[in-house]
Figure: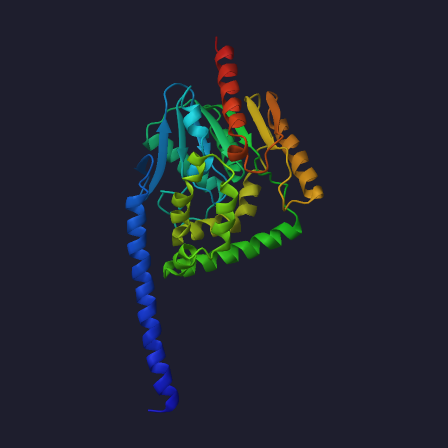
Length: 335
């Protein structure tokens, strides 16, 4: 045996041991996380995998909420529990996010999310009418849902919703790079490396979120550990990458949704520029938010003056108020 072989073979053995140890560490840690952070709602089988949905309160119409891109339902913060004081509200996790199982065979497009949500509501026996509330990418999904099931939807709230015309060539390049980064994070999370780095407080993504969330109420801050446990899972990063990689297709699916008739619509948009947003991009975003009001002849535009993109956390009372306004309008119309 040569000197090279004497070095390579032990090295491969050590690497194999490290690999299996990492996989074991990840598997055990995931099992602990699932016991420590159980689902807030119920898991509903929609055909070979389960989606998580959490419903609170009583009344009609039922409010159904979809969070932003790569975001679990807990990122709605205090909004659902406050809405539950005056009607029934359901938040859910898209496949691969939060407590929902992944659907790895399917690309994560808005149409796929709409199909799965419709099946989830049917299986869970959550009957219409619905008021749909969508934040960011969730707004794209809910807009598409409202166009395809108009008989079920009586109101729509778009919370700083994404718009099909928002992308520039530079942003497309950034998205491709970010999608690639998410795939890398998926791989390293499979062998526990991401979790180890995160627990050592050396993961910039989580540290940025932790610093940002400290300005919110304690009830919101306590959700960070739950969110962190989601980020350590390979399925989370696979889903986040797929949503990004398919964002162009999701926007293309919206091209035909140019009108929602007279559906009661509230467009709630940020009024404070995010720190990384240029003045030019902020102005374009504001213009696109105004354009969303043209979807319905029965629309209202509300600007969250003290909010960046995270309106549900910055000014949750505005989302709650928007839902309350729609319910009052719908009930007055039906008198």
